[in-house]
Each structure stands twice: as structure tokens, then as C-alpha cells.
Length: 619
Image 1 (cartoon, rainbow, N blue to C red):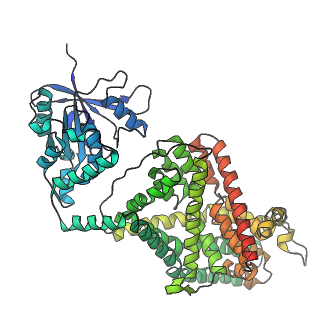
Image 2 (image 1 turned 120 degrees about the vertical axis):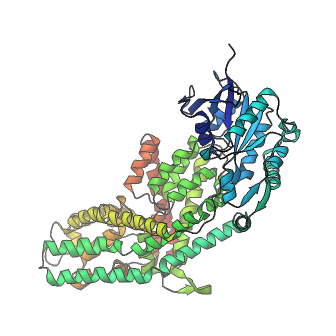
Image 3 (image 1 turned 60 degrees about the vertical axis):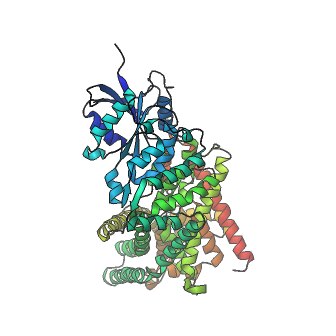
């Protein structure tokens, strides 16, 4: 008995192979793993128009036969007949995304150059039409030298024609263009990319106005020289807006917190409960909540970038920088996620196949300036940086905030470069991604996204920040000071702070700052609430308790100390949840401990350098 005829679905990820496989095989499929690897094997039975049964294999998505992941290695081995126990496919069904034709044609040339019987399923032709593209399958067939069949897998369109084309190449009755075109052999990657561009252009009969506009935008936004300038100019505007637009709302929240605190002081009898409310709750947690407007504005820009389609283009632009420090573009998305929070950023590294690449990304993720740092940056900048403009009406405070974000990025890149040449040494893998369509962000979706992020921030303020602040307040409150003695000096927390001050005095920090760093290990924002609580407990005048922490910093800190404090938070890994996730993702304590040591070491060194440089400059 002859073995069953076999066909394999091959193509880039997101080409619609799985949808096509499901439509062709229905319920007649089996799912298992390939022997010796965790890559999933999907096989099923389809029937050709002539009644012949076919074993159909859905191979993992691949961008190249130069395998950079286990998925691509399995696809390469099966197609080349090198996988033990797996017969070589008799026919290859090459699935292309009609809406992303140029990108998919690069790998298509590698497949066709094998010289095997091949049929192209030009899939998602409806989405190409939606995007304003009218394609000519015959022109593409002539360029590739194989039959091309337009399909819409999810709607079962073109499946009969695809079966007939498979039957034709199976029986040798394919048309003349079904013979592999010699010019596809022995091309280098740049040559294949150039050929893909020419073939895609030749296959597109017409473009809508929208498609022409989007293509023109991409020529500018993805330009290797103009693209990065536009990206950093946009980010510069974002950080200017965080201060300029948020100020009226932040002032209103601050005034509201102060008014409530004053009302409590005037109406609640003096004692433990009133001190709990004024010194712990309002002076501590309230000092963080007033920065909600900055958080909302920052995330409004981030959501707009995601919804408009520009975020993916920013990732593409940054790929060159990532490669220069030994990382692939795959690391950019997890690092980008870390600007919101390092926890989802570290978890997103699961998509990185190379273990050394993934480990490096995990180790540098805490250096991305997460939203928890924003209240710390905002309160210190507002306290010590004048609210003035520099050349061209640029706000000085926004400029400093922008510089801090850039410092975090440059610190992460420098750390990656050192790590990739030492403890995580290895070669960077390639990176290919698809560009989504441009579209206007929907106000409803923006509002939902902003509410979710604002709620997360407020929930942290009501749980982690509240608990850490109240714990610090209790340590500051007991034991009670003798008459004439400072309450902070007499407290348990004061004694701890005095011990820590010895370690941080060389970098310009005092006891109060040292004390604020301990509870900030729970969450970075707690540094602000801790300072608010310390200053409230320290104050003898009831009116001073209600003062904003910004005013107290402005009155008591020197500029070198404030700059050193900002430099500390650029590097310090002060978030226990991040360390816990890193432990889980690396299966042990070795790398989280390494992360703590090198980040705290960098924080101490750069804070010290910043402080002594500022002192030397006479600031």
C-alpha cells in the first residue's frame, strides 16, 4: 500500500495558515508535539477534488530557513526532509498575506527556490481590498513561477480552486509558470528583499488614496534618518505636555487634599486618629495621588501611539539601536511594555526564543522608566527646577523629565552591551514585524484605557502605598519623644534612618531620604508618600503638616542632593514585585540577586557622580 500523499502549509506567522488548515481539514486533525521539542505538530486529512486523500501538515510560522527559533528550526527540518520520523512533503502550499505581500514574498522566494511542487495561497485577499489594494494573481504567478490562488480562509473562498491547483502540481499538469523560476536560486537576503519589493509592486494593479497616503507616511516615519528624529521629537513633546498640561489639575488635587487635611485638623480632636489621617493618610498617600494627572496624560499619549499604529513603527525604528548592543528587535516590545510597568515587560520576554537574548532583556527591563517613577520625578523636578522656558518656549521642567527618560534608555542600552559581552554573551537574532494600518484612535477606547490605568494607579495608592506609608508612620510615631526632642529622632524609624544615613551621606543623601528608600522597595511611588509622612511627623506647626511635599523639598534640599536623588531612581530596582517576577521567569534566585546587585551598584555610583559633579560645578 502506497503511503498517503502529503502536503505542508508553509508561511510567515500571521499569514492565516491555521485558519486555512482548519477549513481544509475540519475536525479531521490531530495535535501533538514533534519528538524531542515542545513545538506543536498539527496534522489533518483533506480531500482533493478528484477524491484523493491528503495528509495536510500545518508547519509553524517562519520568516526564514536560517532558523532563529525552535519553530523555524522545525519548519526548516520538515521541509528539507531532515526531521527524524517525518516524511518530506510532496507538495508545499505556500500561504501569503495579500495585505502584507512585500514582507511575505521574502521568505516565499526561499521556499520556491527549493524546487519542490508548490502552490501559493494568496490569503486574506479581502483584507487587501479593504486596505485599498487591487492585486493581480496572474502577474504574481508569473513572477514566482508557481500557481497562485486567491483565498479567504475564514470565509472558505478559493478553497476548491486551491485543491485543483494542488491536484495539478501533484499530477504534473501545472501550467508553464508552475516551473520554478531560475532567478530565485542563490539570492542573498538583501537581493531577496529587493526582488520581493519589485514583485509586490508588479502584482498591485491599483492603490486607493488611503493606501498611497499610508505608504508615503511610512517612507518618512520609517526612514532610517528621519524616523528616529521624529520619534524623539514626539517623545520630547509628550514630556513637555506631562508638566504643562497636568499642572492645573495637579494643583487642584493638591489644594483639595490640603483642604480636606485642614478640615480634619480643625474638626477632629487632637490625638492618634487625627495624626493618622493628617500625617499618614493625607500627607503620605495624598502626596502620591496628586500626580494622577501626569499619569493619565502620559498614558493618553502611549494609548494614542498604540491605537494609531505608530507604536509598531517606533519598534521598527528602534531595531537598529537594539542590534547595536547585541539585542534583537524582539526585545523592544517587552522593554516598551516596561515603560508602563516592568512586571508585564518581563513576562512579555517569553516571546523571545533565544535564551541569552531573553535573559538580557529581563535584566535590563527595570531600567525602563516605569509609570511608578513619574511621581518621584515630578515632585522633585517641581521642587528644584524652575518653571521657566528655555529657547523656543521649551519648558525646563519637561526638558529635565525627558532627559531622565533618555537616561534610563541609555542606561539600559549600556547595560545590555556589557551583559551581552560578558555573562549573557551571544549573537543577536534577526527581527521582522508586520506594520498595522494607520487609524484614528477611538475616543471611547481611549477613555476606557485611561480609566483602567488610572484605576490601577489609585488601587496601588489605596493598597501597597497606603500599607507602606502607614507602616512607616507607625515606626515614626513610636516611641513618643520627650518634650523638646524631635519625634523623628526618637522613633524606631529615626534610628533606622540614622544607621542608613552613614551609607548614603557620601552621595548627598540625608537621614530623611535614606528612610524613604526603605518602604519604596514595595513600590517606587512610596518614596514620595514616605517623604510626605516624614515631613508631616517632623513638623511642629499644624499648618506645616498640610504643606505639599514639594514645598518641603524645595525648602530643605540642595540642588546637588535633588539631582542625585533623581539619578538614584533612574537605576535603583526598587520594586519587590519585579524581583519576584524575575525569579519566576528565570527559575531561581541567581539572576534576580544579580539584578539587585548591579542595579543598586549603578544607582549608588551614578547618584554619587551626579552629586559630586553638581557640587564641583557650584550648583
